[in-house]
Amino acid sequence: MASTGKTYIVEHLDDELGAWSELEYMTIAKESHENGASFFLTSVPASLDLPERLKALPGFVAKPQSVEELYPEKSRVCLLDPSATKELSPEDGDTFDVFLFGGILGDDPPRDRTSELRKKGFEGRRLGAMQMTTDTAVRVTRIVTQDRTPLEEIPWIDNPEIKVSRVESVEMPFRYVKGKNGEITVPEGMIDLIKADSEKGFGDLF
Image 1 (spheres, helix red, strand yellow):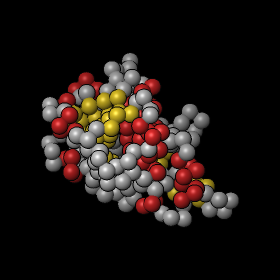
Image 2 (tube, rainbow, N blue to C red):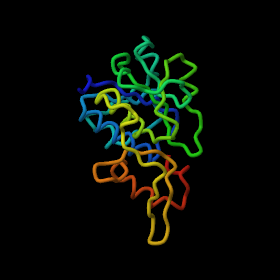
Image 3 (cartoon, rainbow, N blue to C red):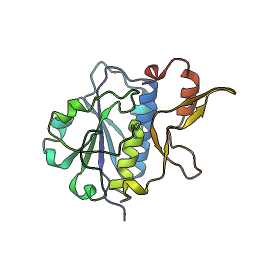
Image 4 (cartoon, one colour):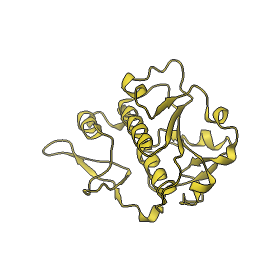
């Protein structure tokens, strides 16, 4: 049985918004709205010029405040933390109303950006041992806490290869949710972005 819609927050920890993050945030907003949930992008600096197509999405809310300003009651906020000792479970949907993510999760190699939020005292849960992109992490959290599906029952695709030309492919160093047709679940336009920027390295995408 599905749980009540939650609030998913990405604390934007960068001064810029890359093409990769823009597509991820658009996807998070759309999927959150479709599932009765809310998506907040917090700690957005005034200098950050967000794309109009992102701001226009009904599921997207940008806030200049930090998460602790918006939600001082920390006991209801869960930090998705790769270093946490406890895995996220469906029961956490009863314990927490807000799920917090430190962007950008999908760095390769991973940087511990979540440490800045960990210091603020939020209780942590992890989504397994493998690195996920931000939209995947939010998607998985929603599947577990709203749809009540345990982590071990979610179908995965790990480190998939994406063909970027007739003779070349790129291995994505992340875990993805397997789609209904057996493909990886990624934001619309992401495969084209990966192909276009494959020669630049992933650092230019984020």
